Image (tube, rainbow, N blue to C red; front, side, top):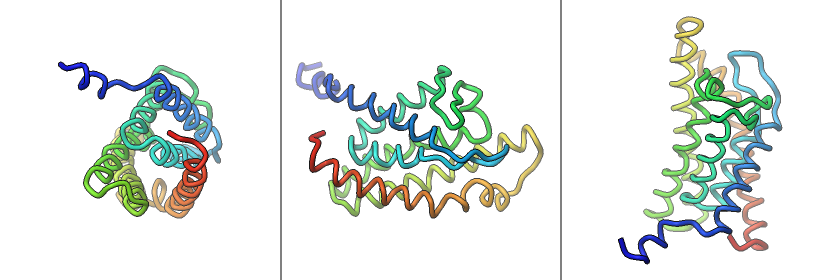
Length: 189
């Protein structure tokens, strides 16, 4: 492999620092939450953290930051809502929504590559990523809930896990978009 190709596939130290900082930001965002009793999904600022990470770092570095956040949760660091963490939290009924954050990154990357670095492309990519995250998380929720508690219909799962979050998540997307626009003027990532 040529040196140019190897260098292209590596992250610089500053990029690694930014990815770690945004993984930490996602943890802080997950701690800002309104708890909900099981099996309901708590209201958190996690999606804001994912949105701002992708908007500031782009798809590739943002995706790596999301992966670091999920790996921190997997090893038991209390980075999730309610200061929880561990494989059990990720494999629980609501873990599919967190794992679904990883799907947002390739969607964002595809939007960047296919349609360019335009604001509307970023917004549509984030919205599509959110929709796919909802779909993946809801399917996961239904499987885990059915296994642990009993059968649940799609309508009930959507009313518990998606419908209450649509407007807040769109508001978080708009907040992340506005904040990223301000920050990008001051910070060169």
